[in-house]
Image 1 (spheres, rainbow, N blue to C red):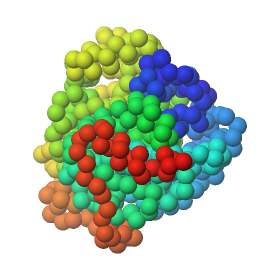
Image 2: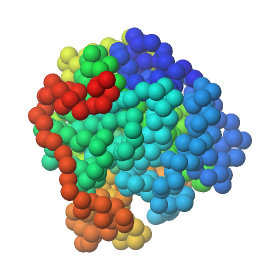
Image 3: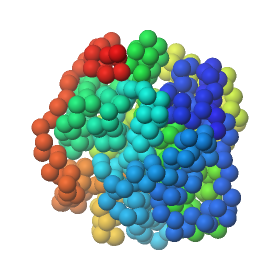
Length: 468
Ligand SMILES: *Cc1c(COP(=O)(O)O)cnc(C)c1O
């Protein structure tokens, strides 16, 4: 499989190079030349197959170069071996036709582990093969950073630098990042928002001398390998609920649009997905874009679901690319307009195409708290605040169409957000051991101003790839 940039001005690459590149050199995102098709018989045959094996089967056509494809089953096996639940991504029913897909059984208790653990193995094996070092720089609203650190800590060929917005991640999220002792892990508390951190990251990638000097590799949700790894649990949960013979809708707590884009890709591959329901918190750019056709970031409002406190949903570019019939010029024009005037209009035809598959709901703070309380009262089940937005959106869908099952993706373990849970149900959920003990370790982080040059210098001084 080969990949092209959404903006059409970067070289086409093979999977392995996309894996290391992250963002394309023209500022675009990589997309596969075509989506592989999974026939109904192949979908049915996934029933009862262990998660790691299902992942290897579904991801193989995206990888397709002989070497990567051969390594995939072992990488998937290793990636999911550390999960605390044998099913890796189990389903729990909480109401009629309403299911929660638990994606929080990995080492950092959030869904990002499902992709990051696999990405870490893929990258490490590739760097070994090419005898190279790389520098991972990530921007995080909380969970990506911890997941990246857990996936790359201690790897001899990789240094990890994680930028997070100072004071805007939960204490558990911060401690998960700052209590890791490995020398190759560096946490930077940026004096700004998540969007500032992501902006600096984008600039670093466009800074060619810097990129080459430190052998920059990206692991943010724009990394194609992550999106593809997330496609797997749409299939496994779909099959558990009767796919390919039954249509299923998915409600997805959304920030950067990576997770829900993976659901769209699963659909393009042949999974019978009915609706893709984008759940946002007060940071509702996607809900507004779908309602009005205007994609316009506003200031970020801090909420009790901080991993969704995002106003620039980067992966939306991949959807826009497909919805415009893969029109590079239209995508370039949209993002030029975004940069110059702070917004773009989605043209009528692509907007119709998007609305045919997606709907969106913005869920406010009080509704989120009420949903956590309701699900606890009615089902004895504790939702984390991110998941609660998805469950709220799923219930809204079920009111319109009670016959089609809805899977709400549970993106984090409730114990990561104890204050929000206590507010809703009066007690704090317990962190699973051994994480609880680990988080007591001393913290290590550096506060830096919101300034690209300062961040670049900090990284270049410490990255081993730059030291040769
Ligand atoms: C990252 C994250 C999200 C948002 O996922 P995107 O792929 O950025 O849309 C939602 N919930 C939690 C807990 C997260 O960590």
